[in-house]
Length: 193
Image (cartoon, rainbow, N blue to C red):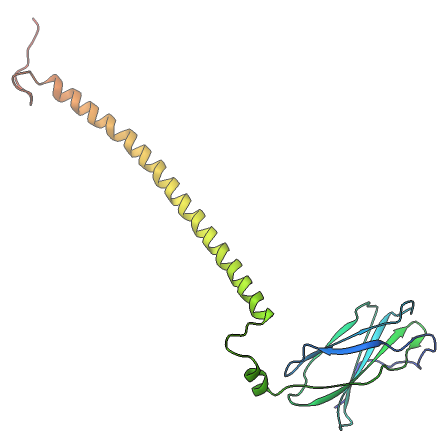
């Protein structure tokens, strides 16, 4: 299967081949290729040739109008050797290909076995930090809601409290007007005539 995204013109004698081509972050189905360019080269893009070792199929990736010096290789097969070449692209054409870089993707079982249960990856740390941030946001929202509920309760309680003593004072006045020292619970009314 051949993936051909664009056609490169003849190599430009002015451009140098990319330097220090390196494969990083090798996973079961992906990897990252990085490189450097010779300072002063008028590079406007890159082209990558990815090929399975001992197989004639290749993938060709080309990007222009970019200053990036890395590219993700995706949809790789597990436990497979690949050969990668990188070329710089300028307005006048492309550079010669870089020295070939050979790498092998791991087997899924090797990848899982190589990670001990106590080992924590940076990706997991990032996910944990995101989880903690999410938890923190939820906690803050719940605390604000509770503060609002408590404030509303206090306001309603003050209103009830303000109304309740007035009713008790009125009742106390009314009953004290009807009471005499001999009969504190009410009694005969004295009239001042």
